[in-house]
Amino acid sequence: MAYPIIDETAGALLIADGRLYHVEDGEARPFFLPTDETMYYEVVRVRDGVPLFWEDHAARLLHSVAGAFPLDLFRLRKDADRLLAAADARRCNIRIVVTACHTVLHLSPYYYPSDTMVTEGVACSVLSWERETPQVKTVREDYKRAVATAFAIEGPGGRPFEVLLADRSGQLTEGSRSNLFFVHGNTVLSAPDDCIMLGITRRHVQRAVAEAGFAMETRTFAMEELRAGAASAAFLTGSPIDVLPIARIDTLELDPENAVVRAVRERYLEILDEYVRHASLLRDTCADR
Picture 1 (cartoon, rainbow, N blue to C red):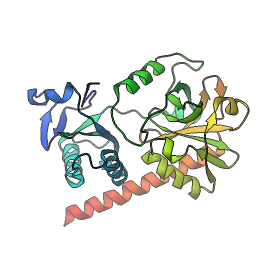
Picture 2: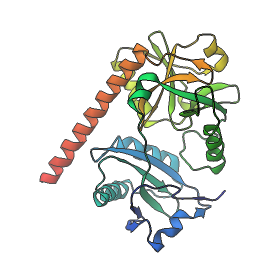
Picture 3: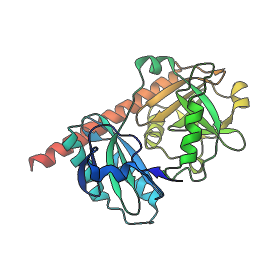
């Protein structure tokens, strides 16, 4: 089903096929119109002018394309740096969309949880939806429509911050735009790799779990198990939200102040800071040469 390469943008500039455009440039209009081309995409968070975990995003995009057409990762990074410089953007999201014919980079809207959300947790709802190829980031209009409908439905905690996906057997696997973790005692649990989108943040959160001294196990839960006490806490991970506690899933209340969740979040934020410091030092060193 036809869908535009750019459905929502932030800022006034974009780069398409190596050329810098203003979003109102008439020659850029085709990128805002529906197309039947298969689109693969990544959204990269930028902090202090540094595209976070760029190498991981590039590798995942390469995996998604899977040789369907050539992908020049060196040029992609050059275009990203060029767009950030032209837009004078230090804190933003870059969305990368590639098709067999086009490579488009633009700034996309972003959100960060409030301090209240981090402290008190967020509300989630559940959508019965099993993605056919969860590890491939491709645009599907039917999926986007179903998720948008779920977000619009008021629940016990108001409209949900996130919609959790339940597979055909009722097991919660991941969020519509995030990865999902549960906590039982000092053990952190997440769905198997083969049934979810392998989030970049998730990978580094798993490292944070180990470095914070907790065990990591693989499994999923159905709502009936959670209501029976199978987990005391849960959290979401993603590039704009870092580690975000869940306060409720539909009518089920969870502990947003769980000590394990707090410790994992703290260690992950340290990892994030380390990456930005290293990338900034490397960039400054190269600029001095």
